[in-house]
Length: 560
Image (cartoon, rainbow, N blue to C red; front, side, top):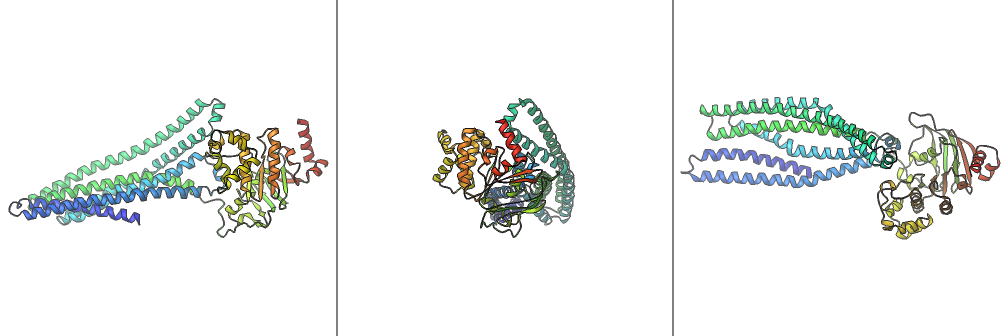
């Protein structure tokens, strides 16, 4: 509705502007007899002034409406594209820089905003003016009207064809601009690494190379547009002279009044200049459409793991976990899991151990449905997780990762991330259990302290305690621990281990740990090698049997 108001107001404003030109013609023709018959001059003056006021009023109505509508569209596009982007599987993000993706969301929204503005204020008004002017020209000279139609169509068509030929230059600029944004975010997000290796000059040279590529691409795009504008300027000057000369010839042979000459000259200029403005607008729109297309092709590719149309909500009668003949391989790599089958009962705590690459982290990723299995299926409480809604699956799982990620927000917001509605008392209790309340309260801003980018203002141990508090507060029936105490010193680990043991009661727990001591009170330990289970049993039983687990224990004791 708002867009319709904008378009209708623009049409009305252009109509008033064209009618004003005709009003000038009437006023000029009325002036010679004005002393004898002043009523005609007054009437022409009143009509002309009314049209001028109406013209400005309609432009303001369209402007005020567009200021709200076009901005809202930009926000809607960013929101929708963000929601779509977050629906991509982790493999999508592994191959792309975060900075490139974020810049493309902004570029897409800005391109749509620019296109809407260009159509409303640059392309549509002159297009309407050309159509209206041609119709009014026919009132005086049909031949001139036909000639103007042919000239305008040929000129606009020629420029549009040439503009399309430059689309590759505009798209090349869009791609290089996005890559520069990606490089900026990548380096700024890893400045600690840059400082550690003294790579400032190296990164400066690398960034200068990207800037040079962007500059070359932008210059090529802009120069192509300028060549088109120059071509149109020459054509417009020639045609304007022809129209003006034709109008004077009609007056000289008595086929046009003085007012007609003024009207035809004004309308001729409106047609020719309008065709120029339309062509130029189309040329510029080609550049923005190229950027919009490039960004959309990157962001709006189909989801590799779309949620089924009739996905059901996960119901947890019991939080049991089953892997049924699961085979999985990352793209372009050999299988990590090869026909893996295992059952974890509700409320059971199971530790996963084995060498790097054995498939431990992959099992946790598949449990969270970050990837789809190559074959076989993963079930929770007897339900295939590929057929349930991702929201209901995620709400059933808490995780404490090895590298705890925090958002650039307050500690309170980070701890509440899995349960935003949690009360302050519940947050404090979770922090007490995670042994992080004392250091948070010792900070100048307490829970209001900003964690910094990915939690850089905190130490590794502090981030891990915050991650544990977040998992405790979430209170989900399934708990995943991925080296949950790896960043803690020995004294802190003992305290945190006690908190984790309280957290694990009544929950189904799957934990990855290289410190075997953290698994001594677990119900079972599963030993993995090359994606297969080689041992499965209680910690004490496995410690007494010769095998991989006993060898790992022996190596641990020797290091101690």
